[in-house]
Image 1 (cartoon, rainbow, N blue to C red):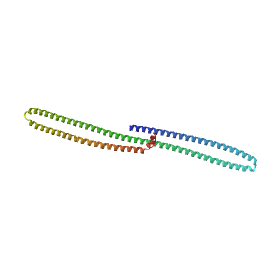
Image 2 (cartoon, rainbow, N blue to C red; image 1 turned 180 degrees about the horizontal axis):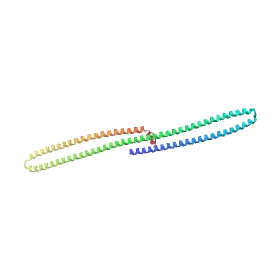
Image 3 (cartoon, rainbow, N blue to C red; image 1 turned 60 degrees about the vertical axis):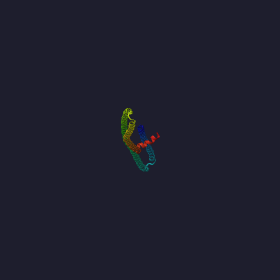
Length: 295
């Protein structure tokens, strides 16, 4: 279940990253369109401004020509030379002013074009840097996911091996216990059969010898009771001796299983801390963590 949840989280994070990339591309495309529209508007404003200046300049020239004609008609003679000189000076000044204005306009246009080119270059560089950062983040994520998957696979393999070893040990212990129980049962059956045979023979002998001496029978019965007690004590001692090493082996195995369990728990804790550190260190998990929490 944990692996399924993690795969779902990964797919959700990937979809979120894709949506963010699409939104960024749309915003970049919109900004480009806006910049193009602004440049078009600026060019149209410049063309209108130039046409207005030309029309104004032509109207001024016409008015000046009319004023010059009137002044020339009024001041004939000596005033003609002075007016001509003044008109020439004015025309020179105007031509100089016009040339300065034209040069200023050209310089402005060049500076604007340069600024637009610089802004376009900067936007291209930013987009390239963003694409490179995204590719690097994706490669880092892939490497981190691979390392996490490898660590999980290793831990799962170890747990499987330990479980298999434990099952084998349990099956071996069960088989040993079964063999020991069977041997005990066989030995008990044999001892019972022997004792029964002996009792039968003794009863037959006793029936025959009752007529001879009652005193002998009593002594024989006492001896039989003692021998039976001795045989029972020996059988019990043997069974206890056989059970002691089995109990010792079981206790040793239980201790070893407990130690392995503790080791595996410590390893799992270390792996969990390592995975948490990787996720906290990676920028991708930090950016997507609040979204997942809100969900």
